[in-house]
Amino acid sequence: MWGSVAVKLAHITINDLGGAPLATHNMPCAVCGTSPAVLDIATGVFNPCWECQKRGWILQKRKPLGERLMDILMGEDGPG
Ligand SMILES: [Zn+2]
Image (cartoon, rainbow, N blue to C red):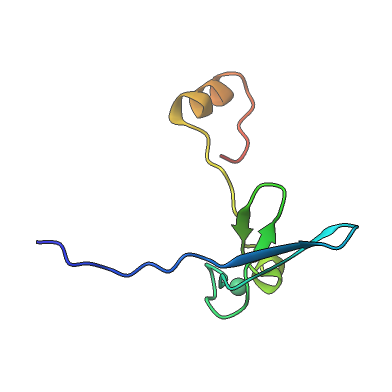
């Protein structure tokens, strides 16, 4: 039997003060869990905090297996 788990969604506020939008949120970094995550306003995706990004952490979309195999076959064996 599965128990219930409370999930808190991030609270995001975006203020457009006549210029570039400024966002505030309460989402912690998924890597360290202590610093605030970095919100990409254009996509709505949370990236690791700046300090974790300096240490090499990134959020990366992984290509489906079929696309990765095609990349290997075509000689484009990049990350993914
Ligand atoms: Zn972090």
